[in-house]
Length: 255
Image (tube, rainbow, N blue to C red; front, side, top):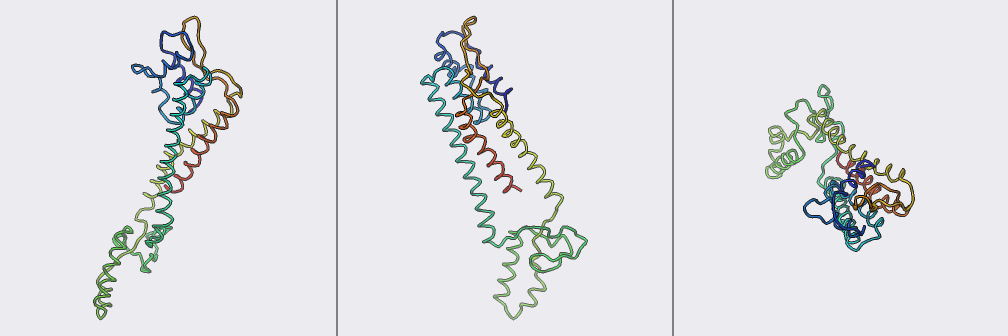
């Protein structure tokens, strides 16, 4: 997201005919059901919330654009509530439920299959067939311990005949590959956030219009004008900073 994207979106808004009043004309552009220009701004809720208030400010805040601006910020707020709620649940699972269930971090268990390494259960990881995911390993441990509790006189025989295996990373190459693919996708989101921050910082501060009436063709001309400092601060606080925080949280819990 940057000046080119905003410029293309605003240029797309100028494809209408008819009214002379700038505010009414912009409202017609934004509410056209057959050729709705808002589609050009709906690729992300962030661009929608950034551009619409500036268009409304430039044409004197018509009532319909005020409602549209409020709607854009409502969608932005709903977006943050949903995303941060999901991240909070992920954090709860990784920091509370996983430790309570006894699941330990994979760390470097069984990184080198040639070494005689011990797993979490204290046995030597001498063959890949003894490796299981945590749920399977926990179930096998439970079954063996239950049998020992039922037949304590045969505990030695049960432990010799029933091998619960070990919990460890079965393929560290696959693990690193998945982390690389995940972070590759996350890097694109980081670049988008940085581009939006750069766009706001390099945009001239002022009350320049983003839409003006072209008297020659009797149609609004849309452009990327200057932005008041207060709107830059609002956009940084409401859009850019939460995007970067969300990127950091998702990256941390995802890896």
